[in-house]
Image (cartoon, rainbow, N blue to C red; front, side):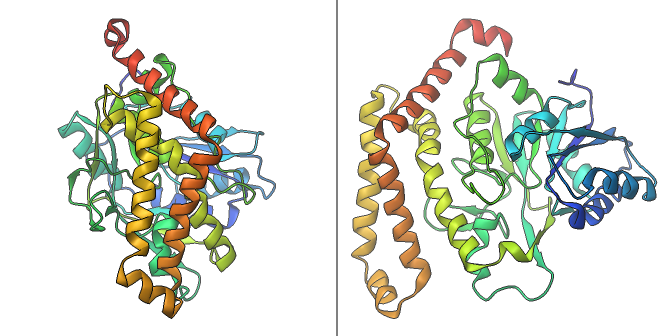
Length: 356
């Protein structure tokens, strides 16, 4: 981990991303850097079989190698282990997560460092992105783009679903694509004995993810703020294989399986501190049930059901899946709540404050 040296480590993990890497690297190479900020690209080849590492090296050399490209190999499949490998090799004060289909605007490095240096309370920083396609976007994509971490990031807490305002996001979270992270967060989490509640997405078999949301909540447990800036923009390219209705639906419902785990963090941050874990868990279950009952009684839902409007029906099924996860796996979900509460209590101990 870094010795707090000013600079940015771009973390780029890929599995068979050869067709996407050239443009992603070209956008990194084109970063505006009038202040001469130190930076690097940490490239992790996650068990690729398509020559991704060689292509990345050749593409970077053809671009003039404007910064070090440090290549690592992670033979174990899975985004989480690949990203952890990258995190372990971060050299600078800040890191930026770049998926192999993310094309950062030219001002990303400059703007991100300016904001982070000006506001030391920021632990995590992100912005909007625009989806791009090989051809025409599916007609349904605008309604589901949030599942693909695309479009404006929205305020989902109050139910208005309006674009986030620049500044602290409150109880909202940010996408991992393009996320800038103060690297000391990972060191403090490790020192505090943090253990993720997620195993990580693995190819097409397991689409359940939530590590990005979890990191936002964990940073807030450490008393950092999570900020949004509309000045940080990237293009998020959608591969054709991810645009089938089957993949879309699997992705949509995968987030329902992540929700009980994320609720454990929301409970720790904003739940009743004097409430027991079972009481807070049952409270969250009650809120979920009330939300389902209230929504299905709305005239708008009845009209959607009669018209076979797919999205409102899927939203209600999503809520039911969340409730099923909480009920059928009550013991495991309770363990999630207890683990997060235990981590929070360790952070509040005098010994933990000395290492902050």
